[in-house]
Image 1: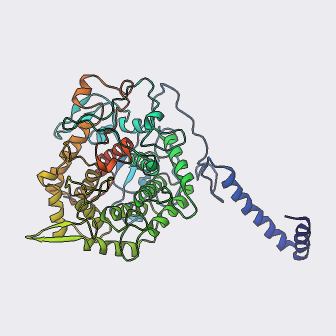
Image 2: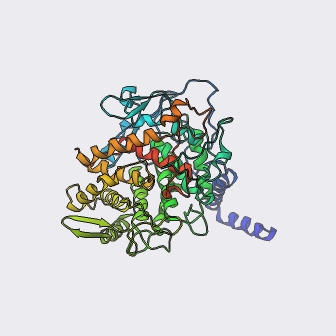
Image 3: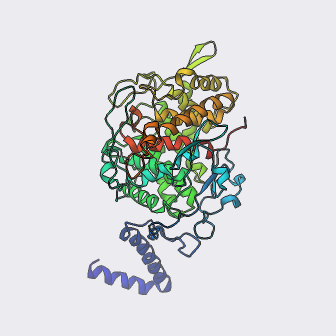
Length: 517
């Protein structure tokens, strides 16, 4: 500000008296809040947040690292009840324990899909599906047919943590350069059908891969406030925030994709809902607003803003919005829900005799692979996505003949999970598991045993050959991950396949059913 301008301001203040001075002080306070945000790029401070202990502590405080060889804190367990309310502080708890959110009744949220993170006994944690995250010798779980890993260190989350870039993101293509498993061998993908496929991954998919990895930690009950993975989560949050532009877009320029925006919004919403950290609320809301803007008016979401609306991207956007609402956020989604479900309904093609299928979009029957060619495996990924969307939006109930017909398609013998060339698809398994868990009954029983057993047996380090070789994270860099051998992980690579496999194994510990079996 120049000298003459300064003199004019002083003169105006003198003329205005005490009221003018008060306005100046308020303006200086606002300016200082802005400076806090600009001068602290490594933090997540927001203006006017209460920094008092036990309320909303500063997120940019460096957490203390656990000493080498020290015992780990109790691990959070999942139940199906509800997130803490929006904007509510985390409850004070003894060191090393998760906040007990059972004091926030699910009725406050009025949502049938609410999940809750709380501390449970080890007996309730012994099911084979959750145990996929545990490293150790595999044993059979009586009555389930699923293997269980005994030791408490989560192999999946450990692999993700030990392959995070120091800047906070996960790089699908160069994750090996970020590995902290010094001395471990890189074995690459195992053969499928006698053929070894090269590892995929693209630098342009960093946002999507990072969001999927962060979502896996959140879905396991970990956030940036406490627990063994708080630093991992904190760094991922900070990096995603650094990619955010004022419009709310977090995607890769110049053509941001809906799926990366959706996964980022879902991950940030889950972190907010899990921690109750008010600093994350405006970040998540900004991402959600841009995601809603990406939708084509009167229809659903396409691959990008200008893309033709399709069933898969519409489902991922609905998943993000649903996750946000579960976390206590309130995106203006009523019109989007209505018009998107109208689009989804128009994609159903009746075949007669009670049978039907779902088109990918107006012009294509099936999704298109990264090479621009329609996927040939024929797995009903669009049918799985349709069921998820219609249930999450409340536009179909479990007695819908159409929904029952499509659920039966997912459970057909040729569509069950198989580790065979042309039948491996992590995105399909995640969506189908989400759909069939809600449908329940015989369909769920048939599917659940197949998908959990397959994923547990194909997790690296737990295949028959690798168990015989006594593989460990010290000897095998891929230990705890899943091989990216399908088109759905062509861009996100091993990070994406590991995150989607982990999310698939967590589903029925995170959501309530619409109706019990």
